[in-house]
Length: 500
Image (tube, rainbow, N blue to C red; front, side):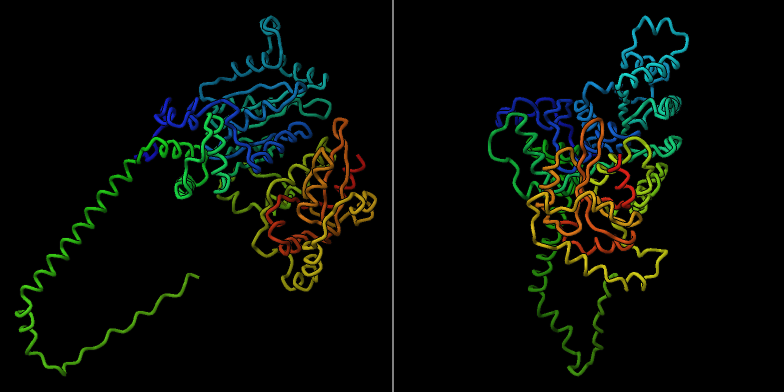
């Protein structure tokens, strides 16, 4: 039996808490969307994938993680130069309906639709016309894995259309299951995982939902309750909503109540049995003693040998595309491999370098395994760890732009050497603030590139002769740096991005 109780439309705690709406019901109201630091990173990345690359973003997470809400936020954030067709996927949707709805969403007149004998060709021409007007046609497909096989094939055909060496359509997809069919996109898929809430974010999330619903008092959840909610939900937003509702409603899970009754009954039975045994021992004490009197005092008993306690049981570097057909478990086990695959992205494609800057904001998971093609002895002999530990733990703050290396310094570096790209922004002051916040110094530089007439600022950190040396050096970073999003790239890709 499911231990969670579905929230009612008008819970009993609305009036006592002076709420205007139910705070934990599922809703399309964007005001309830909680933008944590991790979620904001994903949202920025999705926007950048749409504007500065030809990638098809796959927003991947289990049910209840907020994929649909994030997709709605992305749609709201898009400007007028993006024409959107939003599909809420269902198995009943057929390709013919998709084509007609997409034509209308992209601004094709109903009369032109009726007169056309080939709607697929009409849609292709419409996408080309929008691109010529500097308007980007975009598909937003929620739960693409719920579409029928024919509908998925139709959408994949659309996404393969090209003209003037450019793809005519881009897309942001959400799914909770892996889809081998997406392999036909030939490397265009960029997977973006949604994180669960941390225990710290949980309290802020609940407070946000309550405040949007009109609550103005002190937080109604005690620290002990918050720990229980986090433990039961494992950070899943949908389960958090259900548990928070139950706590305010005073509902106790049925399964917990039954378990409590059984446990309580067994406890009382044990206490009663022990009491009766003690009474019998006192009443028949003399008779019991007489039974043992013939036994000689010198009778020897072997001592039980003592029991011997058992011994205790004993980042991402980007060079090929993610195989969307692998299971979630395989992806988690090979995060390091996926990250390494991303470094060799084709830098000649339009907007590729801008994509790299935002990919750098996703967390990097360094592999705990030793490099398979380099002898451990050779790596240990490299005196890189101590050198970079002194640089990366420096307490000096970067207060002025003059303290950073220039773009000329970047061109002086060996094109085959590596560096970590830490972050990027349209605002140079944010990059400088980032340097100050994490006290970066030494081999750091801010470089610029152009995209749609705007200047993009990106921060790189460190100079390393190889990937292995770079990853080992990053293992010596302070804890505040280790957990930051970062991406390892070669200097030649940075130099090419600046030249553009």
